[in-house]
Amino acid sequence: MAVLTNGISWWFYLPLNEGNWEQRKFYAVDIFQQDKNDIATKFIDFLEKENVKTEEAVKKAQQIYKGRVKDIEINRNLPKAWNKIISEPDGLLVDLINETLERICGYRADTQHIESFLRFNIKTLEDSKTISISKRPITTKIPPPVNTKISKSRALPPEGTLCRFSLKGNEYHGQITSGQFQVQDYGSFSSFSAASVAISNTSRNGWRDWEIKVPGSNQWILADSWRKRRT
Image 1 (cartoon, rainbow, N blue to C red):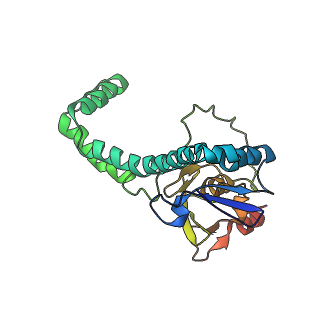
Image 2: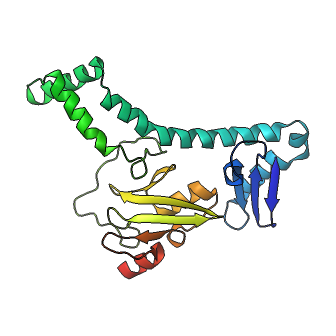
Image 3: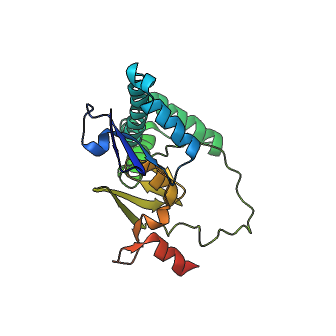
């Protein structure tokens, strides 16, 4: 394990793993931003003498690293798996769709009709850069009342807005899609701050991290500047 720190920020690495240094980083601590109890727990896990001697610290580090890599790989490849299923539909999938269709409208379609429909709709998931699978579990949400208003200061930019964020020499890209913030290789988020936390492993104000380019504009501006114009 390797640790880089200026006393305030701490970056923890597994230097023998593959990839560049950013990819080998498995955790980060910011003394001023994160909960002090969480910081203390992580310092004990990774730096306590006994944990280092018994290599328990490295085991815990590997668990965190593998969990992060697993999530990234799942998010990257789920669209590919879905594309493969609907571009090469088997009989079970076609039968399931046909049974559901019959329950809804009383009619059944022929196999070729359903296969054509599936191949046509593959276009909705072909671009994994703009559509990715949320890292959060799927939950059932109760729709808000009709007169519920979303605060302009908290609302995301309009549909199709492009987003970018630079951190430690790396640039991250995303897009506002279906009311969510979709970040390439990281998944779906409800806010800029949630995306920044997932990328940096520290507490951050995402409005001050991300630059955006709204549809119809050729100018990149800070998300916080856009928000202030709206309020």
